[in-house]
Image: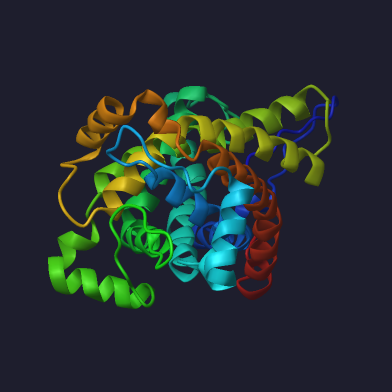
Length: 325
């Protein structure tokens, strides 16, 4: 991540470990941090998925899952611990693909654009909002495309329940069974069904996550409000998580419904958007928002805070094994 030197005395800017780390190292560090985060937040993700499917294509409907905590309690009561952690393995693989790409490609893309548009300045120091948002969106889209089949399986596994059935129900015994079943029925294209919705969801979310995180962190550093350390990372991560939840939730609802459908009730993300608003009203796009905040805030906090540590850890390994300077 980019670090701003807050000393008042001018001196040469030293590169931090995250600036020296290889692209593969960034990918690995981002993936490790995301896996830690998803272990904690996956039960909330299960509830969020089911809340987003409540009342689908219906004017009225019973809200069985009323809020994140009540939803987790209901899921645990009916399906136990395994029910609360449905789709976890698929979520791990997806997070490695998504966050590994997002956190691994963000800085290289941003640095390249800064060198192109701001050739007279040091690329790692430039904090242009437009460049940061575009870099975040593009790096997130790369990860979304790569991880789309795993998110597809994860969504269907998390929505499936023999006790409370919401939306279309598809049973997979595991992530590989899910991937094989989809491939057998629909081929390679079937594995990437709904990838356009995934691009919209992740593009919007990624366009604000890292820019808000970096902007908040740099603002707090430059104005001597906080010193570089876990407290700063936690504060910046919290702000980033809240921003992502607001921007991404409508597209997350759409993605969940498209991924979960077994038929063709939605032709695509825009068709789903129109039908959802027309039948359920605009606020349907914020179904599961409480769970979204409850999930994305701690997920982003854990992920981005741990990323600073995993970057340093991976850098130390690279320096030791590869004599990385």
